[in-house]
Amino acid sequence: MPSRKPKPPKLKAAYIKDSTAGSTTITRQAETLRERIRRTEEKQMQLERDYKANVSMKESLEQELNELRKQAVDNHNEQFPTDRTICPTCGQLLPEERLEEMKAEFNTRKARRGDEITKKGLELKALCESTVQRVNELAAELKDIEVHLSSDNEMLHSLTASIVTPPAWETTVDAMAYNAELRELEAKLKEAEQTTDERYFAAQKRMDELNAQLASGDTRAAVEAQIKALDKRIEELKAHEIYLGRQLAETDQRITLAERFVQLQAADIEAKINAGFQRVRWVMFDRQVNGGIAPCCRATVQSDKEDVYTAYESNTNTARKYNAGLDIIAALSKAMNLHLPVWVDNAESCTKLENIENQTIRLQVAADYKEIKVEADK
Image (cartoon, rainbow, N blue to C red; front, side, top):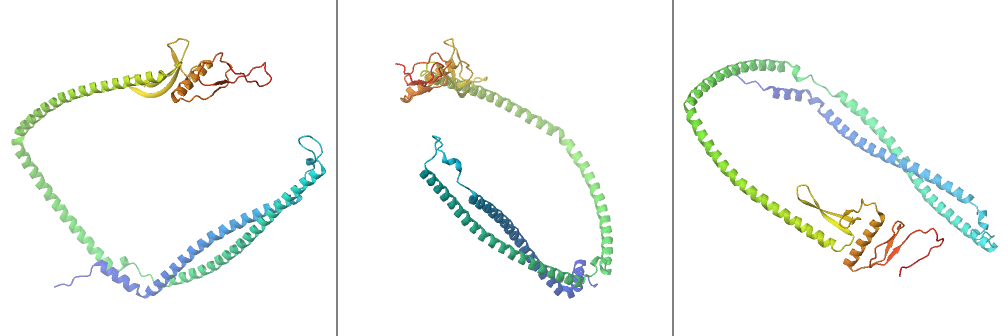
């Protein structure tokens, strides 16, 4: 019985194992060294971030110290202003004792500011010195890490160079022999598949011919049965259409009644609200094109004609607007039983304001009066 040859994957694995057996220890050392380099580089990145942050903080502290020094110089050079010897109210010279008191207060504030600047400067200086020390420490650590990284990279390069790389498996004699055998088997398989496809298509063609002969005898009976079933379904759908039409008519009638009820209810609400006003009529609902209504709230004002009302916001007659506003205030005050004073400003264009139960205060300009006077209507 002939012996079976090993499969190509097993031969390839054995070849690679035998070829790299002598480099296993070196490979492990190189992987360990790469891991150490990775951790060192992560630490280096963290140190660089800390170094930049501390350098930025140091520069900010130094700038703040310079500003404090400038403030200290400005505070030291500040002198008591000479223009304060004259009273700003009466224009007379201030008494000597008052001048001495003001100078003492000035010197006290100046000394207090100087102490605050000095205290803040000492704190900033101490913080700046500690930041500078931290920057120097981080710089030393970064320099030490760079030395270690350089050494480890040189060592990794040496280890990598000493690893023996065997020739590729595909270039060996065994691999080429197996590839030739594989191509031969693939050609035979393709030929067998082509023959099988030809036989399959011939059998399928014959089966289609037999099915066509079998179906030709039953075609007429099947068509007649299908026509009867379709006629029955058409009658059922017509009956259902009539039923749905009746349902739709009833639904439309109910919707119309509901909309009519809503319209009457809206009209009743508007009538009840407008009963409390004299000059103003409120439109609480908009009549839409389709007959429906939409809630709103718009005030209209009575025009020159008693039964004609125009929109409050578009009415250009100022007097009519003011009297309409008084009508609204009077109605709300009566409804809430709370009558507060009403101020009417810019009322020069009104010749007459409506009388309401609230106290009305009218503000206007009169060229004949040089002083403010209050006049009350009795």
